[in-house]
Image 1 (cartoon, one colour):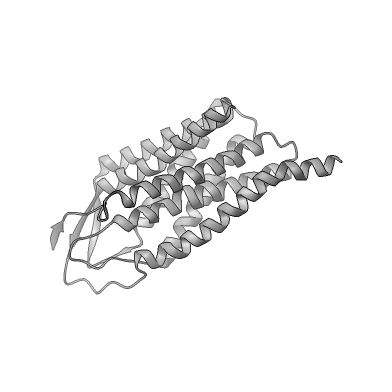
Image 2 (spheres, helix red, strand yellow):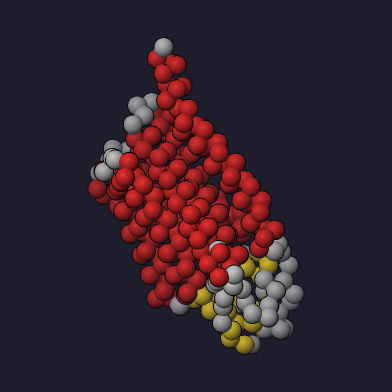
Length: 249
């Protein structure tokens, strides 16, 4: 068995920049849904906005960002594939855990303790999605992790997610919400690359030839699906006030 170095930027910064931008876009939409839920008196509509926010943050800002960033991942002299089932499961985990975090601070009365719980749930959702997504890697070898860097990656995710929620719920101005989206983007990308720094690979020619999807073949349908989700959420955000006005009339 041979211990090898990893490449996280095999194509330069061409993966880091779009990964961060996508994460910020998903975060801004998700936090906007969260703010909309906070101001919605109808509990059913409030829950609907929470679900939308979970898809935006969990599905776009976290899940899509991860696989865009993974386009820059490479194990020298090894063919890297991705198993589809754990990849799909990682999306369910991200959306579900983030949704639970959003529910704590939007469907229940806001308190500082609930803010901390929500930030912890969302941050751990980021981390859980990352490491579950990494478990989908298939190559002739195996991955191990530096426990200290794994712990640091989780701390980064929890602290930044909590800060983003605080900006959205407590400081209710447009600049604060933009800042919250930028912070959430840092939470996701910072956690991702800290987690990747924790990874160590060992290649072994005796391992079977990997089976699964190539990175691009996996990212392309995910990207298209996420683009449709973003378009739908933006449409609902921009038309929600019109719908409300129509109901009043």
